[in-house]
Image 1 (tube, rainbow, N blue to C red):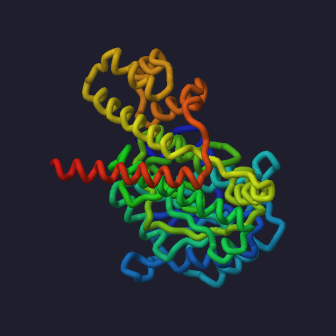
Image 2: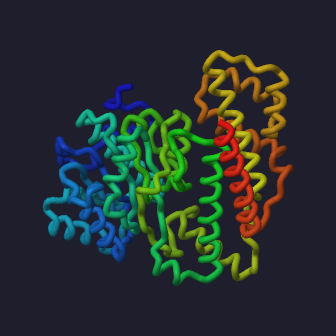
Image 3: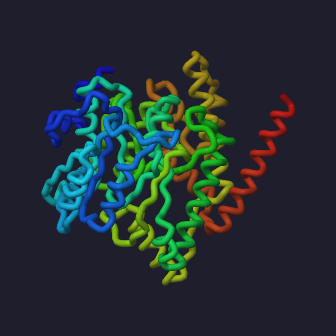
Length: 404
């Protein structure tokens, strides 16, 4: 694959130039920061990026990374703050772009796409197939080793890396109590799922310890995999999840790294309809209505992971020429809650595992057989169930190790 040419419509921006200054030859990482009205938080965002250290706590060479900040449709002093910061830090390769986009494009999905495509173009100029596009946000503070830890995961074989994103502790405590409780419970719930996944559907490219997040505040990808996936899909939001799914479709090795960390704002007035700020507002409203937070039960999650593991094992056997029997296909279709005829047709299609799993999930949603088997439960009950499922999985793993 030639990463220096445009390979999909999503990469058409790579023939346009946002930054005129060429990248330094030593540049390995291009950090992108979409900004809109972030005057209050931007100084801390830029300071964190300027004070990067390596894994030995030594200053990280500024020549090894650059930052592209796109201030779009700002009505505050964000752009002037960024320019002043650049003047105060002349050794930091900070490129500031100002744009007033039409309403149809003035959303984070389009802005992040423009930035990532520009980063792709610049790193391609240097011939770095494993050059890294690293995304964060204008209301977030990356950890001191954010770049170094990301590069370490790439060196270890990852094609893309999602960092662990935590809310600002002071802002978290200022949240409405029910919204805060919902957030903390969701983190616990999804963390338990990520841990259970490592037992029931293990992925050698993303082993435990791991987390569950793949969002724009900390999302890195090599330009090789970015091009192979078709680039950032043009969706208003959640654009980061759309890119994650695109990467899975091409079997990119995605790492949910606990070593890559970012702190982000807990504000409740956001820029997107489906972002964190909106979710916090939804939880606040739920608390006012005394509405329970309902999620998939622990049993449903475990069943889903076991079924997905069965698909993964069968897919690997198919690559070796294995021909499943009709009984095997019907049994798997029953387990997945989908049509056996549909599954049989999918198994003979030339496609990646990631695409097959996505299509199975879409089919499950369309046929609704799976959904009718399960009922949503309160998140408190689901957490208890997940802990029990995890205990059983660990016991089974220990028994297997003892037997071996």
